[in-house]
Length: 471
Image 1 (tube, rainbow, N blue to C red):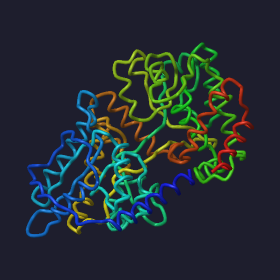
Image 2: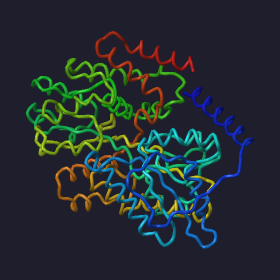
Image 3: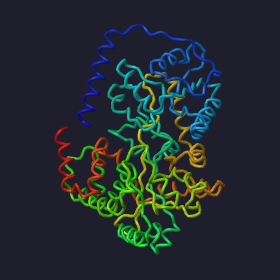
Image 4: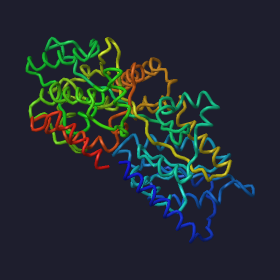
């Protein structure tokens, strides 16, 4: 991964140099009026086009400054209601500030990945979006190395409410004293359980667990009662369990935090984690409950909401799966993970790359971008994001009890409860992919072998250390 990043940076710097040598005068177009602000899906927008609009709307000559915001919520409401809800939130901001600046909203139909790829291309020419939401795609290393994006830390440090609004993103995205990106949503992950199945098996429910030993005991009782404890696959749900078990002790947390910079996987914390995944998870379920992995393998979710399994390792957003489910919505409960410190709990909370602002804007344009990020991380918007079931906000100012009392739908209450558990956890860690980068795929490629016994923990350690040596 380090080698790949180095090559990318080198290529970017070379292309930037060549572009600088051949640079010609930029053209500009007339700035759109406030009535031209768009929230409907639009074609893929390049950063260079955004920069052109900015140049014409920088606030000179009495014109209102113009800022173009590019995002990936292009989906029709019937396809994904959250996308339409997010566009409404964006539009409300544009309307509120129409007398101060033109806030142009562009939905990119290539999504967050397309926005990321466009930015990579445009960085080579020395340009960048005015402001864009990268939806977790980490453009920061390349864009910051090119000197094209704004350090948000000074703005956060001078405004306590703003800092509280970005919450967990502040520390997670702090690198070398700078913060280049924050998000209005985070990936909040605990897990879900079917209370009725636990009661049927005579097992302690997850809210009663003190340590991981209680997890093992519950799995044994569930299996003994003929109940499949959980479904997994060679990907996402097993990665969640892996990351969660790493939070069990001070030593294992320290290893985990090395992430992609780890020098060797030959470590007791890693070995113990892989042994747990093999013996306490993968080998506790039969082949029918272990899918191949991949984005299309959703059987582990289907089985849980059909009442066929007792636990589901997935994020807070899966509260929506409880609606009209065969398992009975009244039986679906959220939980966070135990540790080996009695009574201490852990959750996975990943912000990652979200809003990124160009460093080449005028003061007026920069102010507009900062105002937008403040709005998107405000308590008002945080409450909307949670109560609408869109996801979890990073804010440390959300009053979860008041929010739970203010929503009526059972699934909305479940989502609020799940978010609160994540935020209240004693230990909050990044997800496996956020922490280990490309090694996430290497680790998950070993799950099938650990399950069928064709690989030992020693084999996994040797294979992963070979990957390190090759890079």
